[in-house]
Image 1: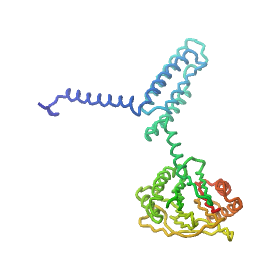
Image 2: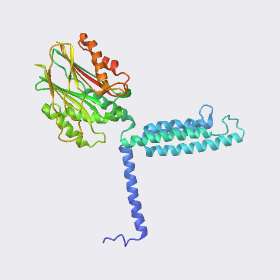
Image 3: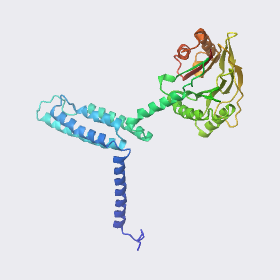
Image 4: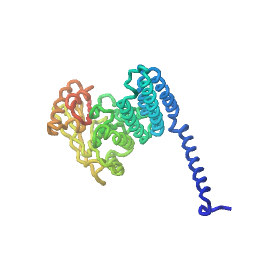
Length: 386
């Protein structure tokens, strides 16, 4: 016969609550030793290190000073979870207390230890400061959900994926293309990226150069997400449907800084005919070998991620032998001390120096020449018909 909660006595309710609490603790303990709490081995090693250091301090304080207990605190901040770290800190606090009491007693007894009468307050403050820093790192790592051993590996893998997605596919004989990308501040992640592929049986070369709002690490995560999405869309949709689809994708993300600029190039490798579509991106520059002049190719279209139903109108052209097409982001031409037009003129002037060399290996040289000290993401794509 079931007994209602109201009919139970206080002791029965307390016993039932204690049983529930014990089951939760037991389950959390099992999860700790099985799952993402597998740092118990590191925890055990560090907990064992603390009394060893204390013993060294008590036996040979000249070689093992009291502040040596900061070593497991540093390692624990790198390796352990916050809950494990607090247990380690408690043990370190007990160790400091034991050292202080023992060394002061030894000093009063005339033991001859030249350590100033115990653990100095400055040493304790150093341990506390290091412990606070380690706890902050552990909490951040726990919030992200990345173990200390895999965090760097994951970031390296993400960076390599972004680099691989920016690689240009092999072009047929008679064509040369190269791309250079340099994040702001020497960081590993950039808000600029390129996705490129060959469609129509390899006859058409499509490339999308994108500049995400922000720079460096601030825009790197969004750039990585967009590069994957754009790479899936590119080649799967007709050329004139790519930018509208990309615009809809950004609008669905509802990011606080959810806009980007893109230049979409569709180049026929057999005839040299191309069409350039733009979403608020800077114009491309086309070097016409026959006249030796640079022509501005400016397509019309709004920024991606601003409003629905955006229209993108392209501009057409033809690349002949010796022609060069140059696409770039604003980091290549914008600076606080010059106008945009002056930046474009400077880029074109530097690019003319490499015309006689066929533009091979010149993308990085152009970044160094015109945007070496610019604190912004920089990217440039060069395509030459030999």
